[in-house]
Length: 251
Image (cartoon, rainbow, N blue to C red; front, side):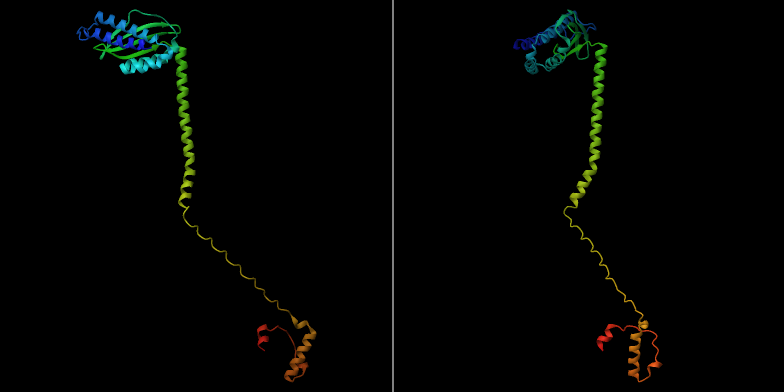
């Protein structure tokens, strides 16, 4: 593991030093020596990544992170694609070298058990590695399957977020009720108004017609005649009414 990490670092230093003498060329075409150096560099880095044991990927990455950020990202990229490639069968000797704004790029084509892949590196004018890329060649069916999975995940995420937002909106009414309850918690409740007392039933005395009671009429007639000194025959009782109780008590 240490040897692999050390080999990557030494290769970066070696190729950066060897490319320094050709970095300032003014020719529109890339120098043959630079092309050869970049081709060898791309093939060497690819072999270095492929030969890293699976159980040492994380440790190699932590060590290369101290040396170069680009090499560290390369280890991470290789970790993500290696299971889709399988073992390496062959790699082309010559890489496709191009001049870019910041320096040079070299892409080498390799054949693996499961699929082919393009491995690319970019360098600055001084030959230092600036990026590393692994580009497996997937079939149309695999690309469509991956696109469908991405679509399902994207739509699922959107629906989950919408459901969550709907749930929050539905909880607003309970939040308002809780706030009103907390506001009215310290207030004294107004006393309920007393029910009006029902008036006592008034019993109206039923006036009895006592004129039909002959015995009572005779007695009253005799009493009146005796008190006035007149003859009872001259008196005619037409009605008899009961006097209020208060007058009898005063008598």
